[in-house]
Image (cartoon, rainbow, N blue to C red; front, side, top):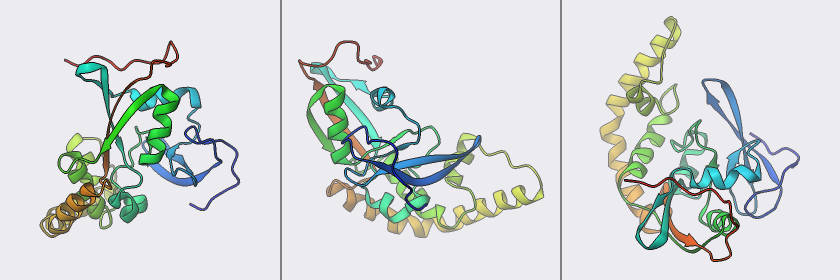
Length: 217
């Protein structure tokens, strides 16, 4: 999607936001926006007051009063390579930070002492594989959505696409893994993995009333 005239400010750095791309969802196309300065990506219409809640929604409390947050890294190798095919693009996700944008967002949320790294295994490897597979399938994130049972084809055309996507996924996976696994390992070593893991703690000056993440067992 081409840039359009900016009409909102980036919640991380305050610079203008522009149109990024449209993400297909069960409810219809959803517009995503981007910042050209810190390169934050976010759902259009996400208000600044909701950004901290979105950022910390799945945060984990760690010993010593630290928090751990995992986010999709828009500055990753897989995101740059995949573009609109990036597997990290999901309807339920509202923020797609870069390391720079994440630090700025944390500061505005009242967090300090931030440490960032990219894990080498887990979801990041799944996204790397799925991103490359997406280049050959009709449905975005077909394998992940099929496993979750969220694809419900109706009609001959959709059923045919479903069947073709299944065949392509099975046949392409061995060759794709040969590329995606080492690619993601190298990217993670450079901090360019598909997932960013951040550890931080509350600043003493943090504003009262900010959302706290749920305690984990």
